[in-house]
Image (cartoon, rainbow, N blue to C red; front, side):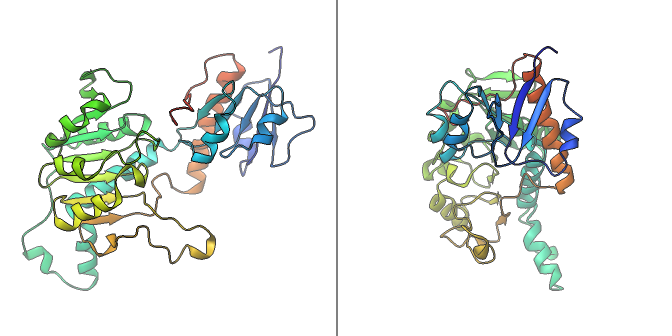
Length: 328
């Protein structure tokens, strides 16, 4: 390779050799919060890039966000630099899809209240009417058919569910394998025939509040809902009311409306202004869908990052492009 591709990674991996061994020749890496001198990097890897980091290198042409999605602050900064290409990593798609389906199963089978009762030596739930929902033969709607949504759709299909999905770029009802793909405009038409709504899309100005009281009201009785995307995609009060009233049979929620702002608040911050914790038909998870043992996640991240950097070094199209205006 005749030229060297310069890349600066602000938050270095625990073991940089894991990444370096995956890269093609001709890639030069620098690490750390301090910019190299001279600042001549062509690619900046940073989850929250600052304006000064972007302006520092006249050679900069690409920013890689080392996870999926853009924060509001990051989007606002990057909108000022339309000439800079932006890319995400989707290394967490597998873990997020797995927990999404785990929440679906836990909600459908009421695993948490059953577990809680038996821990108190209470067997009475075994002998009463079961609230558990059979998933086989039911209809799933995957809202967001990206890297995560596609995996979720395949697993649901494996459970014997029929699967439809909504994707921004879909044209009316075209099929991807055995999954019908529909455009966002079809949402209200599809909801009355949805037994399990699985929310897997990014939060953008267009998707914030996408599922409100009216949309939840279109779901049939006994419907399930899982949100592993972002809390505000679903209206907070409407969701609580639907669960409390039983209009929504059960839900699994990994994403919320309130988060600790500092370390001292981590043990005492309610995730919502509404008492979801009082509802037995909710499975609550503290935004951990992408988590697994650290060494496993780090390997996934380094492989995904190497894939993008190697494509850039070879002069190929870099995967996982982000439309900053849309927010994903």
